[in-house]
Image 1 (cartoon, helix red, strand yellow):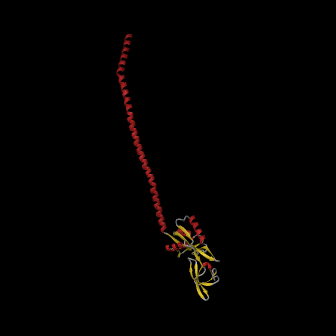
Image 2: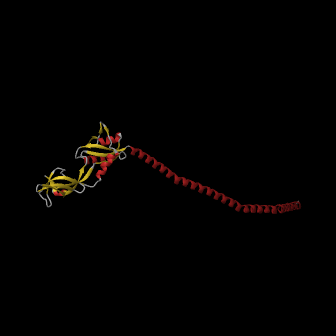
Image 3: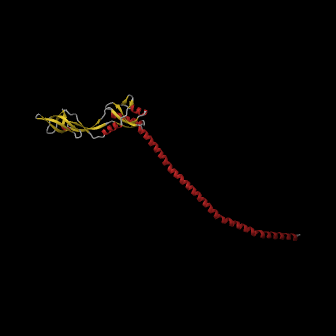
Length: 267
């Protein structure tokens, strides 16, 4: 029995060895080949992956550039459209812009101007009431043999308003303290013609004029020069040069004499 068991054990070992001899080398080769194949495939897969990533990055960059261009151009278009709308509205407003004349108490013209400008600002009417003007001009006045330049109102008791007439703007102007009404027919304010407004504004910018208290035909006394205390009759006035031509009587004969305004005074 022991011999049989020993033989059987030897047979099993032989069978196992044979099996290992048959399977072992093939299995190792298969494993090695599999590992080799997997190892060789990795660089190709890596290159393909990198190419795909680069392509994806290119697409993303292109998309980002297009979005950036849209962001850069869109605001300009929006701004241009907004500017065009504002200009169009301004042109429409300018069409109704005219000069109107309002009454005020004489001597209170500057106070009315100040009050109205304050109301325009406080009530937000700058887009409808643009300018308030008290028409004045500079005048050279002669007093006590001296010249002095003063500012004189052209139309006492009147103020000019550059505005667009609406119910709201009319209310703001009409209810300003010191304003007694608009110049116009009935209750309808009448604007100045363009040439009238331009003439008044141009007059305000002219050089000072000499104001004299005598006219042609008046009798005046000479107060300076070789003919002091002589009387004469005004025969002509040159306001630009500030000269007056007199007819002075010498030995019963009238002689023309040209003097400066400062050299004569009214009788």
